Image (cartoon, rainbow, N blue to C red; front, top):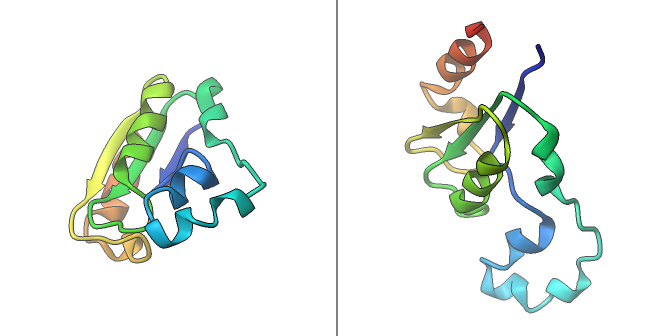
Length: 101
């Protein structure tokens, strides 16, 4: 039984920059697709989403979670994209997930 944990995931590079007006002007320069939507084959994935993430919209993680069987989504309240691991619930979410059978 393998387990995967994704923190503030995104669908692909272009989906990340479409939320940023100044970056969307240069979206044609992004040539690497990095299609995370190809995770459909995974099973039992924990998605950790920072509720104050201004870099990646939470809808990205929710869309990915919908593609995976037995996914679990946990919100890190008060966290941004770069300080998720400082959230008081971060490690308890991970520990709880890893200890599930």
